[in-house]
Image (cartoon, rainbow, N blue to C red; front, side, top):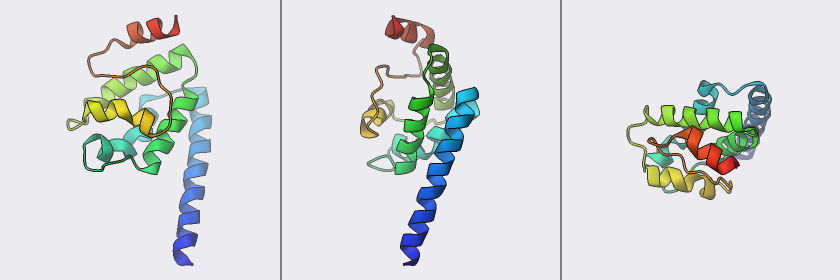
Length: 125
C-alpha cells in the first residue's frame, strides 16, 4: 500500500512538473531549463544504465513538445551542445539513440561539432 501511494505521489509530481515546465517553456527557453530537462538522462548517456529512465524520457518529451518554432529548436540545439561540454562522459552514439528510445521523432542528430544554424535551416527548408 505504501509503495503504491509513493508511486502515485511520484507520478503526480512528475506530471505537474511537466505541465509547469511546458508553461515556462512556452514563454521562453532558457538553457538552464533545457539542462534540467535532460539531467535525468546523464546515467544513460554515460553508459551507466542500459535504458533511459522514465524521468529522462519525460523531460525529452516535454522538450520536444515545447520546441515548436525554428528559434526554439535553434536555442535547444545550441543549449544541448553547450550542456554536452559539461558531461565529459557522454557517449554520443547513445545520445543519438535517445529520442528513438523515448519514442520521440527527431530528424536532427545533435553532435558537439555541428552548426545548429546550418542543420536547422536545411531541416526547415
